[in-house]
Structure formats: C-alpha cells, structure tokens
Length: 88
Image 1: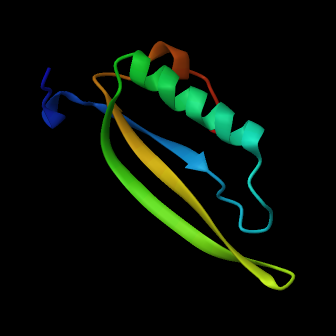
Image 2: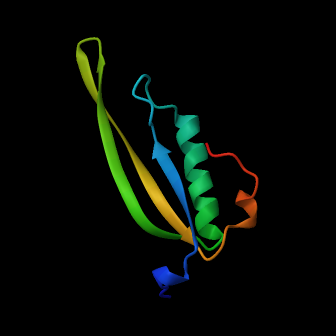
C-alpha cells in the first residue's frame, strides 16, 4: 500500500541504540526503544527517513564502536498514544 508524504501531518523521531557516548549501551533501554518504535508503526506510522550515527569509545586499551539509528516516523495526525507523553 502506497502513501503520499503530503498526507503526513506529524513526524516523531525514534532513536534505537546508545546515544550516550559516556557509557556502554544498556540492552533493556534498547529493547524499550524498539518496542516504542514498533508501537508507532503498528498504529499507522510510516518510516519516512533515517539517521545513522556512530561514535568511538576508548575503554582501557580497546576501542569500541557504538552506533544508533534515528527513525523519522510520519503520521496523518498526532496519535492518541503520544498526547501528553514526554520524549525518552
């Protein structure tokens, strides 16, 4: 089923992954972020864009790459489940 971007009147950003360069990713937080994105998609949201980001962490002698994706999800109107909710 196709949709037109002109039909979308509200866009919400959903981040999946670790956005804090000061610490390692928390798996429980990533699961919560993924569930939030899935809820938006199951309520009629459409992914209209992505931002892919990464940063390097130095942990002792090791260098770790941490990455995250920001999904831009469009809706025809602001969904009821987002009204009054604070962003994560």
